[in-house]
Length: 612
Image 1 (cartoon, one colour):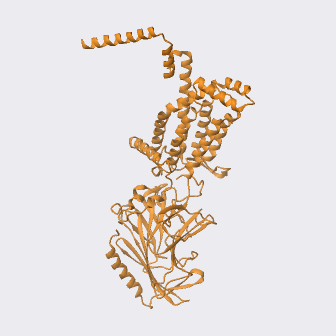
Image 2 (image 1 turned 180 degrees about the horizontal axis):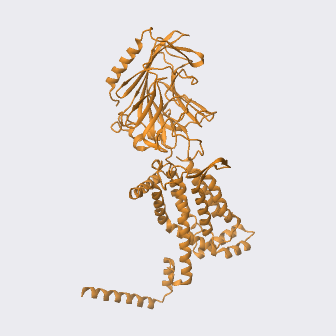
Image 3 (image 1 turned 135 degrees about the vertical axis):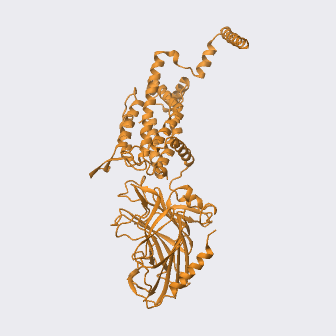
């Protein structure tokens, strides 16, 4: 296999792999303290004549709850951004819908749970997450807050304690605050931990299976605080589906492709744990995380945790650097770093995104916008492609002479290299002329791959009704009742069109050349490999590659047609500067001066006519 073929294979594979890997003053304090104190006082003063409810808690401990619930029925609470269903059982959330985003015609629920799965924000005693506290809590709705409270007694130790859990919201913010206030007779401690609060079982939107980690995934990230005080984003690596992180951190994050759930403790000493399980009966894959409150010697705990549950968009996540940019008055928070992606070519992705949005503003269809940007880039890089084609043609024309050199110096590689370079110099050929354009276009391919794989605005963006209703997912034209090997049970049309276009593009590029085994592999083998690699890729990404191949075919046909015309009529060939200089050097001095004089006389005559 020749070097150019190897380079092309490496470049194409790296585009796919790199693109896949690649993918960040409190208000109302006085009022809040006053109302929280009132709730705590009311909860603590509950008399013993109220109904007693018993439930089994961690490691067979029995907690006795002492406050009669106001209601056991779930209830709704809404802001501009959220439609939340609260469940008094465990003071939890059973549904967290994002009102601005839809999926298959329905509002996205950021909690993906089955009928028997736990709600989010349940509490556990200690660090055991097997059995949550699910007794009903009393609750009050106080403007921007929902306050739950319940009294408990641990019969093993006689320790009585009160839990008050408060959810506070802002009307136009995806960040909300959870306060956990506990007052106890003795310090609350179960094997060194006070309690655990969890986000479970999975972050939405819903899915039936994790088809490909590059295009649909769930990941855990940690903003770790280093010894030098700086923080660094780490991807949590789970061992046997679990991780416990006890070092200091700023925030922890469960992220999907477009949405994130971020927990940012403000007050309290917490560890972090995460669990992933594909055997959950409720959802295809559960991805849950927990904040474990370390035990304290105090009998009163006042903890605060901020949760961000929303889209991975810079306009929201980046607003927590300045206190005037967010409703909470927070500053210096690096929540925008939770955004997946953002590589060394992020600047180029931003340029391509700007171009795509510009075309979208003209024609409000992101599929059309992708096509127009692809055409624009193709026109921009055409001079490079033309030079690459010309260089390849010159190299092909030298094949007979190269074969002679290989025979002549078959036993002397050093002489062969020297003779080859001399031949290149004599013929005016740059051996890298065919590769440099590929290297220049390489960053564009990677940037476009990263952009189209995760551009948020492509979510739900329709291109062609009935065929491509969503550019962020594969185009499914048929669903089988059985699984095809390596493909699953869905038929996607775009990958087939892409593969056919790639084969024809390769055949046009190699037309007129000897079909060696390496060239045949490039023509047929690589498209087939890419067919399986990209089969479950977002349709917006496959659309780009397919249009790119189609434009390459038109480009090849145009250059071949132009070459035929030039061969039929050599006068159409525009000489290079070097050829012009060489031709001028061969013209006798007298003739050259005469030609220059004629040009001056014609110019003077033209000027005289203009003056008259």
